[in-house]
Image (cartoon, rainbow, N blue to C red; front, side):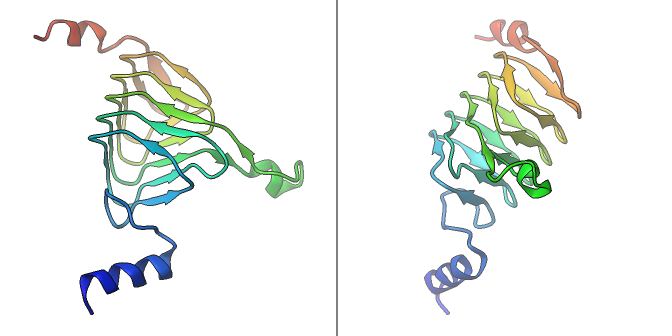
Amino acid sequence: MTPEEFKKLFAELTNFKENNFHPLVWIVGEPKIGQGVYIGGFSEVNAKGAQVHIGDYCDIASFVSINSADSHKKCIGLSDDVDRKDITLESHVFVGSHSVIKAGAYIGHHSVIAAGSIVGPGIIPPYSLVMGNPAIVKAGYYKDKLSGQS
């Protein structure tokens, strides 16, 4: 089997469409992904039914979920629909391994989402450090550190 045949068969068997990142990155829908972005294996970007924008030069580690959908109300019978909201990561955002970026999140540029963090709906200011579950936001944490660089 040639590599091209394997890629085609893999995509058919797993529903992972071919992408420019890693063969085990699962992309659903049509997210807008900027230049110089890295997405590690076993990560998910779910943009089905919503706008997901990942800015330039973001680094998304392995095992990260960026998911615009929330189906819990549908699952338990409180709604007939899946709730979908947009997600934005501005440029130069780092997302650590095993983190979750939930529907409605807006993450400002030059921010760091620490490994294992859960980021819910809301606005994270630029240069922030975000960590934990529930997320603790240290707004502007990196601003002074980056302004001293030349």
